[in-house]
Image (cartoon, rainbow, N blue to C red):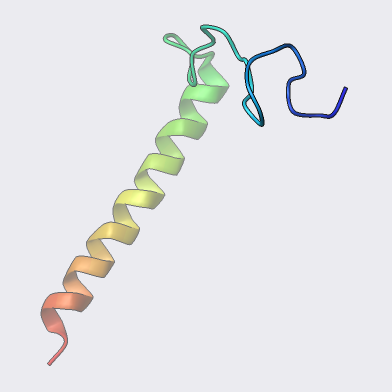
Length: 56
C-alpha cells in the first residue's frame, strides 16, 4: 500500500465511507471538551472583533 487508501478510491483520496466527523451523542467527557474548545474559539473571535473595532 502507498498510504493513500490504495483501494481504488482515486489518486490521493481517503475512502472513509460514511463515518461522521463528530459523534451525534458524544460521551460526557468528550462533550465537556467540545464545549470548552467552542468557548475558547468564541472568546478568540470576540477579542478579534473588539480589537478590529478599537483599532484606529
